[in-house]
Length: 491
Image (cartoon, rainbow, N blue to C red; front, side, top):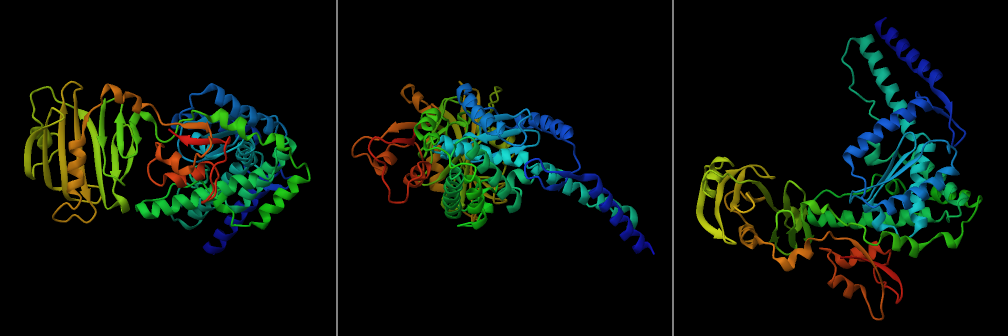
C-alpha cells in the first residue's frame, strides 16, 4: 500500500509540474516545459551577472568592448527576443570560451577572440550564445532539475528516505560541458539564422566549429604528451561529430533567409581591432618568454629547464617536466625582520625539520639555504623534496623553491634541473624591464619571403610554436602566409 501511495504521489507531482510549466518557446515556437516566468528569468540573469563579474574581470579595453557589444546588439535585434536588455561582455580570461546566462547576458573571453580570424566568426560565436538565451536553454535545464528535485523530495516524503541532494544549480555544469547535442544544435541553428538576417554568411558558424575542433585536437594531444588534463571549450563544437549532417542542414536552412555578404566577413577589420589583445595568463604573476620568467612586481627573473611547462599565477609559479614526472613550485612569502636566518625560516616557518645535505650560501648576492627535506608534502604525496629559501632583504621577501618527482621514493631524479633553476634566480636588470611587458597578439603584414619558421623563431610562445601560429591563423599543417596578408603573431 505504501508503494502504491509513493507511485501516485510521484505521478501527481510530475503531472502538476508539467501542467504548470508548459510554455511556448519564443525562438522555436514549440512547447517547452519551464517553471520560470520571463520576469523571473531576467531577475535571475541580473543576479547571476553580478556573480560572473566577481569571478571574471572585464577586459580593460573600452573600444574592443564597444566592438563586441555593437555586433551582439545587432544580432540580438533580429532575434525573437529583441526586447531583452542585452549585455555583451568581453572578459579578461585566457580560456577559449564563450557562454550565456538567462535574461540576455552573453560573455566571450579574450582567449576565444585570439583564435577567431574575422568579424563574421565573432558574430557566429555571439549568435550561438544568443541562441541559448532566446531558446531559454538555461531555463529549460533549470526546470528539468527542479522536477528531479521535486520528485526526489516527494520520494523522500513517501518512503522516509533522505533527499537526493541539491540538483537545482543550472549553471555549474552546463557552462563547462555544454547543454547537450540537442540544445547546442538548436543554438547553432538560431545563431545561423541571426547571421543571415544581418548579412553575415551563415557558413561562418561552420568555420568557427572547424577552428575550435582543430584547436581541441591540438590541446588533447599536447596534454597527453605533457601528462596533464586538457583545457578544452565547454562543449559547443565537441557536441558535433565530423561532417555533422544535422548541422549542415541547420546552416542550409538559415541560408534560405540569406547567404550573407562577402563584405560582411571583415577579416582585416577584425584583425586590426584585436591588435594588442593580451595573450596568456595575467602579467600580475609574471611574464613567461620561452623558458624564462620575468616578474615586474617582484623585480626578479628565473630560468627553467628547456622543455618544461611553466605556469604563473599571483600566488605561485609552477613548472612541470615533460610528462609531468617532476614539478618545481616557486612562491614568495614575507621575510621576517627579526634576524631569522634562511635555515631557521625553513625549519620554523616551513616546518621542515628532517633536512639533509643542508648548506648556507649566497644566490644572486642574497643569503640562502638549500637542502633536501627527507619526507615532505608534494603534489605527488610525501617524498624527498629539494627545498631552497632565498632572502631578498630589499624587497622583504623570502623566495621558496620546492621540487619533487612522481617516482622519487629515496632520491630526487630531477635534482640537477631543480638546482640549476634555483641558482638561476636573479634580480631583474634595467634593460630587461621591457621583457615584463605583457605578451600580446600583434598583427603584422607579411613581407616577401616571411615564413612560419621565421616567425616562430622570434615568437614569445613556448612549445609547439609553429603549430600554435598555424592554429591562430587558420593555416593548414604545410601552408605558409601570403605576402601582404595580415597575420597574428605573439610577442
